Image 1 (cartoon, rainbow, N blue to C red):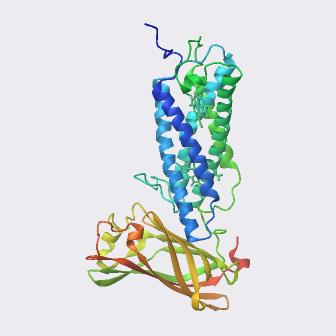
Image 2: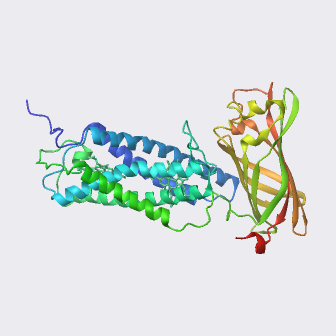
Image 3: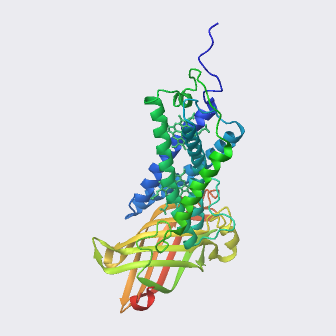
Length: 405
Ligand code: HEM
Ligand code: HEM
């Protein structure tokens, strides 16, 4: 019987290795597309904001898959290394190729890990879907840390792009110019036998690869960064109004009775001008510490996993565009992220301006089902669907001379 087409494990890459390799390529391409689209998506309206949030969540969640695949590939590369390099490649090329492979392996961890660290330390609103933790132990949500990891993530995606282009370019050159089986042994795995040469020692490939990454991260960390802006902060991230005092209250119907509670800790960044420009008066970003809610006797239940799940979703975020509304009032038109779900919210509010002070009051009724809150309470017998939100605050116009750094 004629021998089967060449499947000599010494020459071609085995099935799992090929599958993981091309899966990674697809995932990485999707990650760049999602990352760049999410970053550049506009957020002038609630609908745009919701799309942007979805793109970011998809980016982060798929990125966790890259991390898992990357770790698996590293394990395989150490335990079941692929076929040795072709003898037709000069020793220096074999070493460079091996080093780039290891730099790519490191990238498969370094890129998603810095993304995750950036996410975990920022008060961004787009959650990672699924069981992954939104925060990491020992790492506070801190703007400076988040800016550092953000810079590292952006540097890492540039380094990965450079490595992948050099690597893919090399593979294509071997295929078209040298007509050697390098590319085919990663595509079909079946190639004619060819002499191979010993691989340079693991340390000689992996250590310089680690050094490339250490240098990239050192440069990213040392580069000056502007004022840290929380992920997706509205506008400049610094409002031109300072909130002096206010109240954020919610009312739910429990067993047919209204129960009102308040959030003790929240902050608002407001940029507002009474004269609209292009139909907009400004923008607002409100961050709410979910665990600061007290709601009658049921505070613990409401903060628990059945309802707001404050342990997993500690921060709620409302980001909106401010524009003129009906009857001389205004509208805050944007999106609220609560319980890890982002939904459009339009809050009508009134404003009394007096000198450099503004008093605002607004109210909106939400439906808890839009935020997947209390999903096991499928009817309104114990807890109603509507949640009334009432907010009022007094703010003073920022005095640029004294308040700006
Ligand atoms: C292989 C995996 C990944 C790739 C290739 C990747 C790629 C990218 C790219 C190209 C951008 C846009 C960068 C820019 O605008 O300069 C980006 C931004 C971002 N990525 Fe990733 N990413 C990955 C994994 C992750 C993961 C796992 C997370 C979080 C869990 C994440 C969170 C983010 C965030 C928050 C941003 C916005 C950064 C900012 O500009 O502040 N990424 N990513
Ligand atoms: C996008 C990101 C990519 C990553 C992260 C990546 C990663 C890797 C890694 C880590 C290896 C080493 C496998 C081993 O240990 O033997 C490898 C091998 C290989 N890759 Fe990629 N790769 C990427 C894209 C591409 C592209 C676009 C091509 C083709 C145009 C390609 C062609 C190859 C070939 C032919 C090999 C086998 C080299 C050999 O047998 O010596 N890769 N890749």
